Length: 283
Length: 350
Image 1 (spheres, rainbow over the protein chains, first blue to last red):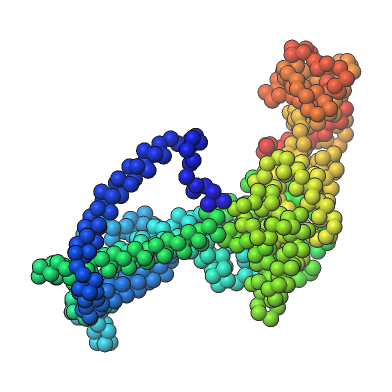
Image 2: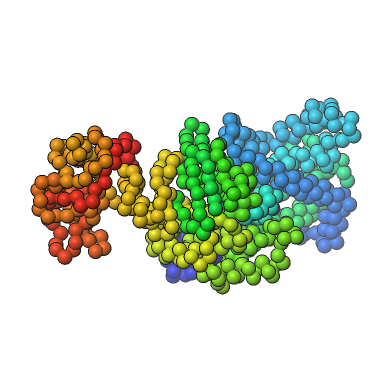
């Protein structure tokens, strides 16, 4: 059914809301101006290099290490957020408690806060002499200045994406559905794994994709807590900037192309999975 | 046999149920009928184990189940808004109860599928196994919900306003079909409704509830023909209600004596209830009620005539045969009440 609804209006057939041609044209022009043209310059520059040179600078050992740090930490942070963001959304939707509105507003704060502020604050807390860091350090856990620190910064940045994606779907899931499952003999655990989680999956994937994408591109909050050690805690965006500062335009462009392609492939994949699961839910 | 003994439930300061005693016989089809807020759904949820009483016991076949959770009571529950699992196919919905059983008691997948197919056949939805709930109509969804509840072979079937979300025609069809299904399966069933027609048509016995208490329990015929309170007569079927004063064994409406037997009714203010069809127009002025016609319309085989009686703010409705044209507005009719019922005055009237 949903597949039918998304079919584009045919020529000559009247649609209730007019202006498909106009809005589609506008969309394409806008998308070109804002997204495609700036990004295409990256490809045009990269095309100036030979393939050999491109592979050499785009996949230098230091660049590969940076990709690993960037994608690895973003993935880990999105995964952590998927679990805890869902719990936060659950609490906001299902329970009433004093201060709920304030709590609700706090969740959006990572959207608005300058990321550098977040980075400095997190570093101050998790560094070896910080509020939390001073207790972790004796236990042999170092958080700041390594990939764990990067992940924590990305968790902070990504939280609202998961919460805000899951919230409306959860609000729509009536408690009757849970009661129905219970009355059929399901255990609370089965209610969660067989009923609630599958219903939330499309929204969870959306939130996950958004948090992941944001994490891969994040720069401001990460550089303060990361320590930025090449081969260890240097993220790809920082390496690109470093190369630019050293007038290594070829290296920066090659890395940008690699990151663009990988990010695009990941997002496309997640979107396809999501479309598939959404079709099953019939939402 | 299901028995409820002194069930009470409060929500904050609101008494949802007060001291309810009720026995449900085996294989019976019982209706809990009442206006919204009368406590009927709360009572059903307590029987199911989806809610727990503050006081009182629930027992199934002599076994106390008051503290058992819904999963352990072996009841099937059908919700007003179906509550289907929308990410599962129809067959998976129906088979859900079997598929969540502990591994040892769980039938194999093909068996679950076969059982789901049989049940869908039973609820006349054969061939729709692989559809998703979003692709079904409201009536079909409710049948799936019923099949899903029956799949676990419950000892008791509970239905909360099962037809509430459906349109009138589908509702009537589904009602007749459910009655047949009940006769075929002989499964003790309790359903909640605020629709008196539904209760009278389907149930073996009707429990009329008001304000957290039971007003009357009985077969539909008794509830309609011999209501025990002014609330029941007003809630079940159309009723006209006159405030009267009983003195010397004669009910009087604004000093006008009304020819209705008042034997055994206490002196003082009372309610005189009569159904639209419980009147005759035979011109006898003494003891009749003068009505001025304001309008008339057809209800099936009758004229439903509306009119006013001086001294009464509410409209009086009567039924007249259609072998004659309906009375004109403004015409005066003298109503002789052929079957009236007197109740001691109650302040709370619907």
